[in-house]
Length: 282
Ligand code: DHB
Ligand code: FE
Image (cartoon, rainbow, N blue to C red; front, side):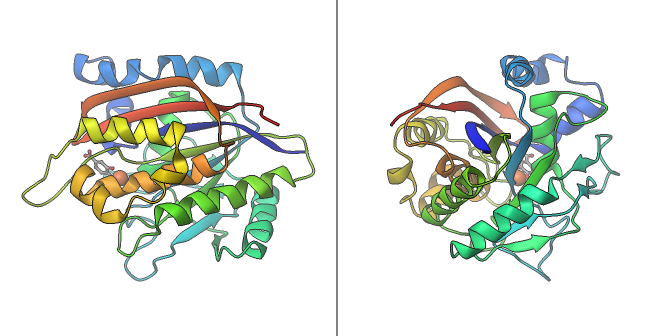
């Protein structure tokens, strides 16, 4: 049977991708960010996934105000990087896993979550920057990736509780897939940041670190935090953090922390990163 043992959480700042693509990652400003992922790249070599379910948000590159799916699953065979205004990032095409994606769609929709299914979609920095951080500059991504887009750009965004519950449904779906696959689930976006208005540049390191503590130890309580708290405490784009609850929901209640990293600044954003492993409880 397929199994989720590990989840990965990381911010997705577009300038991180640009730093790597333009060869600036060894400059002191960026080195401090990339150093936090050195452990993770090694860890990925030792814990190679067969498939990654990557929970992320599109930033009006594939979707737009014309069409706003709350949850959209990538069921296609492959996904090209978006041109976000500077040409496509020079990263590999993302290969999907249509069979597992179709199984997840069937299971999760029958479990009362109304997913949008995308046989054709492009993926922006929300998906490609986390892959670059965890795998570096590669000719091919090391495994298939199933994109799961969450709308956090245009209100109303889904609640923390809805995200946690969707993660639990995805966990059940994966556990009922009849092939031995080591599946990782990633939650991406955040941490605190605000890109516009009088509070542009807002960072709240204390709130971010409490979010990490609660995600690890008490995701049920964290899921009850209302959107207004994210916006007030973590800035208008801090709402991206609700996506981390999808990945956490697919994990066991009790987890071990394999890696934790927090760094400010990276562009306008606080970078947070976790690798969690399920405790094998009865
Ligand atoms: C930045 C962060 C984001 O999450 C994003 O989508 C765009 C820009 C930034 O820090 O610059
Ligand atoms: Fe973003």
